[in-house]
Image (tube, rainbow, N blue to C red):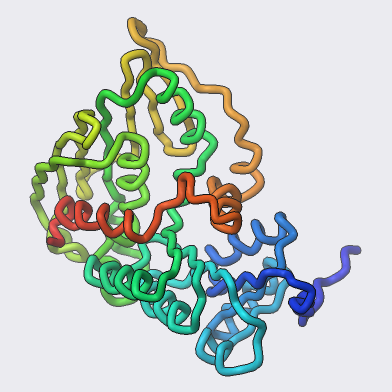
Length: 331
């Protein structure tokens, strides 16, 4: 029989120079981060808000979070915090991250999208910049094995010539989900930016963008259908579409002079060679994506090593979010 995990796991001895990592949140995403940190053998402390979420977290991870939220944590005796991972619910991201910055935490990895609105992301960037903090938004799909391999091959081919992506969401499914006030109304920020960030990360930053919107949903009144096109600062053409009232799925296709890279689903990479109609999967080492939530291990590793390669800085995210607001009809 396997022994039950210790109810109150002792804190590491930080007097020996170990770096303190604070994991804020005790929900499903925090569980994923805890699994990564345990796999890395990194010392960390978890802070949750409710006893119920803490119990659920303990049952899954075997580690007891501190309850009462970050306010109670910082009001009590605690080791100094160098780095924090913020994995709270979307509507709490801005407040929690701003609070940590005010407590002197200088390194933050914040779950996407960092804030529920463009204004909230702008406020957070102003605070981070004013306090001299290094803040990143956790778009873990940038670190998928499929994406890393594609970037390698894109460079080998001489760069991107064009790309397209689909941003369809499943309206009936989302309508039935219980979310805090404001989350569904800002669903493009809260969820769809998963695919837009990946598309622009692979294809390039837009320099020109034309957007079109139509329709409305009971839970997302500003638009239900989206289309647009533009050109990146490197001269690559791109287009996108999404119909939240019709069937579809997220997808990204990136083209070079030699290959078409197909991400459908995003975690898989298929390639079509020039002068061929055949589409074939690419053999990649996805062992980390199989063991942990895809892309998460390498993202956390880069964050903890202060290796900015591939990470989405808050300032970059703010610039992208201004484009997202135009695409979604939030501007």
